[in-house]
Amino acid sequence: DVVMTQSPLSLPVTLGQPASISCRSSQSLVNSDGNTYLNWFQQRPGQSPRRLIYKVSNRDSGVPDRFSGSGSGTDFTLKISRVEAEDVGVYYCMQGTHWPPGTFGQGTKVEIK
Amino acid sequence: EVQLVESGGGLVQPGGSLRLSCSASGFTFNKYIMNWVRQAPGKGLEYVSAISSDGGSTYYADSVKGRFTISRDNSKNTVSLQMSSLRAEDTAVYYCVAYYDYWGQGTLVTVSS
Figure 1 (cartoon, one colour):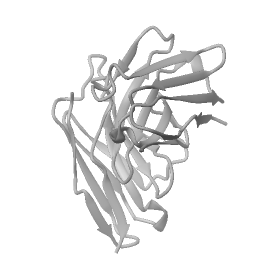
Figure 2: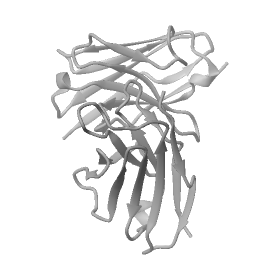
Figure 3: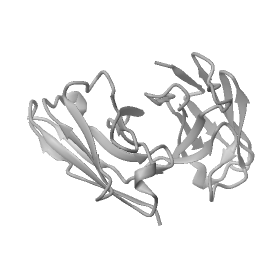
């Protein structure tokens, strides 16, 4: 199975400041169809996960534009341009290229300093 | 509005069985691969099982292979997970997930004597 490695695992941030989470896969996530199936999920405290980003950089409906995804091959990044209080939670990357199974990163906990 | 509603969780003794169900609405159910993803208390997300849109193909994580069975009824927009020979390490919130687009609220399974 593909291994997804996130860093950092804990990210204290100041309100209004940017934040960045890295995700690295053990093998390329470029699919034979040319797409790269790398997703980012947000899980707020006490809630189910929800997808923020699909195929590396596409925001889901209703996701604020302060969230952006980038990367290629094996290295990917989720950026929050200006952290707000509602962004507190755990963020997971997940690959769907080498499916099944989809594999998740360990999660990055974002908290306010 | 998309809804995924899980049911069937609860407390069960080691070695026991439980059947989880997920009722879907608000999207074209028979077009979606359906997944079960679990989250042990305080831990990350773990992919458990998947079933193709027509039910013809299934996948299981090694940790549940031979003990869990996934099925779906496209006429009723439901997907189920039959769990047997349950172990303490199966204790988790189980999420029903439509591809990776939509997530249910989860149902808690506790395996304990």
